[in-house]
Length: 384
Image (cartoon, rainbow, N blue to C red; front, side, top):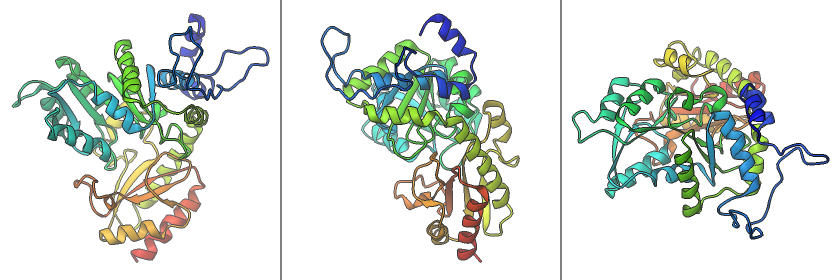
């Protein structure tokens, strides 16, 4: 891309970039979409030569995501491949401060590394700015952190972390801040603009958006760090397939409209859920009663399309509600065009801080009245 092209791209809104970025340069009869380059071997004479090091289709995707997040993107074969690539860069004995209610697999991986003495992990309540700052600075402990890993909102309790304040403290002590931005996507939140060093995505979720791709992404504005992310992908053997890269690019073309529609649906469902007699509590940063509502408003452009709620009954009741839906899909994952519902504690390794009767709902783009009718009948049939 020429400097003039880059300058004009910088002036475009992200809804436009989602459609226009990451495409081949226009040539007569040239393709509008990136080609699927299904080759692991390349003719000699270039800088790469092998599919584990580079693929043209993936490069287009990385350009697209990088422009949306405002950095350099590196794609991986899954979200956890991206997580492990970053963790692999932390020196032995390094200290990482992390949210106590992280995504389950990320939390388990940190526990494993701590158990073998590879890392020191300090878990904190990310909604408590003082606790985070103290843990990062190492007050009452042996030295400051070298890395900080947060989600905002958290999965699935929807806690909100002050990203700007956390980034400020991290930079004070020379630590690097990683923000898992899977829930929000760059359409709603851009952590690099808030001072974070790295943005992580499970692109499987909102970015690709159609429940047919397994992929992870790391994005940073630091060229040296980006180069290391690429090296980890090569040496850990975790490149995405060209076809998945193509599907993810295609999914992102509709990201803006999908996010808008799903978020509108989530807001409407939330407004109805809070008045239903079977609901004990709703967790959603779009509610003015949410403890992190004001902070979220200062760092995000909307509340997103994922919410959680507890029912007035037991864990068995919550499970029965999930099994009673007819339109929504009782399944794990989130961010797809279809609405997904599940009781998170059905998983043996889920964080024990998550209530047994909590249900997570990833709202899709269906008609909102149809969604409500389905959810209401499920609630009414179990918790009359």
